[in-house]
Length: 426
Image 1 (cartoon, rainbow, N blue to C red):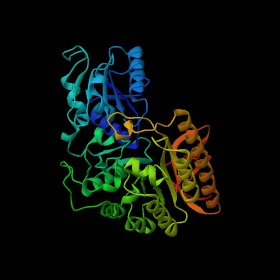
Image 2: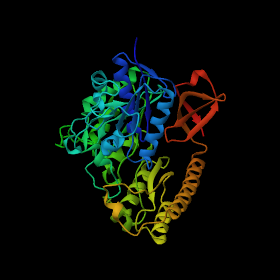
Image 3: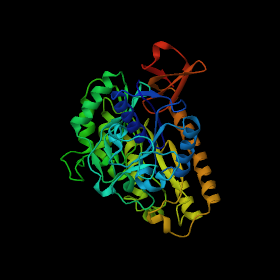
Image 4: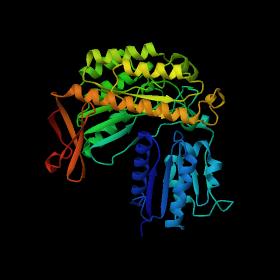
């Protein structure tokens, strides 16, 4: 009888692409996939280091599994598993902790270990120092047969003072262009219409998969090659650092056959003082120039920005600089994050600390600004005709999809429009 497995993912699109790949690898070994809320023989939780309550979330999920299926085998992997393996191993009910180097060996480990087989009767830890993690593991999600998240890059060589991701994922490394195109062909054969390119530092594509040696390739060369590949209609760039978003990339997207007019460009702060404390590799002038360059070529382009509020030392004046900067530039929406302390980061020891209540108030102010900006952007598009890719899911007789420039469209469900691109009057 086949064993059953259920997955739960915390965190980013990259994690979802990796979970999907892990799922397919176990199904190839004969496992039957179950919903996480169902009873299964094996539960795998793919964790995140950015999530504020990573430990709390992990414990709650394991407790739920214990109540539902106390004899099941529980595996914890992902960024938090790499950062805190000993801590996770002490959670009652966890059997196996897989760090960054062992995540994609999940099927092998499940063959080698049984519940309670570790020396201490608890969890077995398979992890190594993050400096020893090398190699690139290709991944893509394929959940709804409409859009897929395709991982082309992993790790990061930057040292932003608030971030634990380099500690959890290691050095920057990439797939080869040939590997990316092969994955595109697989996704096209599965009926996928849109690919979302994902990575930890996507614009750094080109670093080798052998511990940081560089290949003679770049993100610009990658998108040129992808644009020529048949079978996929739309490609979306998930997030790219402003200092790595070159004018040649912007120019290319503006005239591309497949790349859509949508960028997500992390800002983090609109104050140059705070950007310096964050150890970001640009200042507001460069960011403003990138937005202006995009809008000059693509006035209809949707642009999102990440912002962190409440960073240590952020005064009311610094926050006003951020608010005013975002109000003035032509971005369409914001992803707002409330700063939270992370162990082993420079920012964790910085003073003065911004009170949590003030952080939350600033978050609310920027979320309100984001709503206003997206409403304004959508209003600007009225009267345009844009291509909409409609998705499979139907809710209360309605279906939804996104225009190429990321406006959500809802309409009464029509089966013939599922996974189809329809020209739509906004």
